[in-house]
Image (cartoon, rainbow, N blue to C red; front, side, top):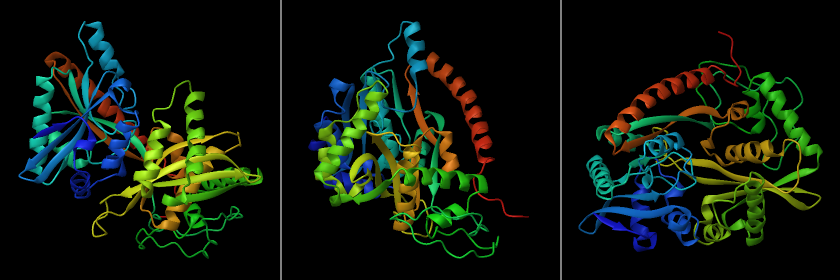
Length: 423
């Protein structure tokens, strides 16, 4: 076992090769991404994120690895434990520093404990727990963990905590086909003419959507009407979009994106987590991971939204790592009614359909996403607390909270935005 303080001390090819072997890799655990967080000053001891990169070797072969951060606060995690920290403080006990195995500022589920085998993963987790005890940290938290990580955590006795996210899948529900019940929305640069209606057949399995109109046809009438109205408002305001991927995104595009991104954070009373230097490094070191949507009016940019594209092995029998998109950031310098929905949901969904992307993850929270056919899914984190009495109290709390999350999921799943076929 080796512990490094900087991503640059670890061979990038070895790290990325191990990540590619995981069933749920994301671009956010790429070596270039983690290095950029440090080198740009975004996730450093000065901002409350002290990195430790654990690597497990057998000879010269990397068998397991993870990015751990020692935290002096709970900002930028999206699994909220402020109440736990407050309880510690009220009892005169320090909750900080604590340790998190996570990607800073990124509530995207995926592999956290990279490993070539279950044994290597268990060995890595045992080493993390021992290191936290030796370092006298209050706790260890695996945030937005993949199923294999959750299984390893459960075996080691960590407590599990569940939250809800909203994801869109490029799959027309079985038995739902195109339907004509009103004029289609104005065509976009990413769309194609709507297909002719075909009879619904419940025996037909789910299939990828043909285009955005095909996607709309799968929704209930009220949801379909609402989306068309929202898109029409944006179009009638004279707004059009450009979709840029990878090297197509110029430095000036990145500059304008950051202007929008920074403004959005400042309007909410907080400085942005990520620096301009971080995105400069993304442009230089990881351009293939990004798609930028630029909204323009009268030939001038007025808003942007940024998504990441990666891979995931969620479809049995398909390619090992089908394409997945992740909604990340947006911002605008002008206010246009419904522009947020167009930039953050409709343009990315249309792009995903055109590119054959299997899933678009909309991120944490936001029931309003269901009206755009982003459906609720459960995300899981794992937690270890060094203090026995607090661990027992948190375990009881998580049991109650978990029951509430299960009921919430059941309630949301009963509110499907898709058309219901007779019978």
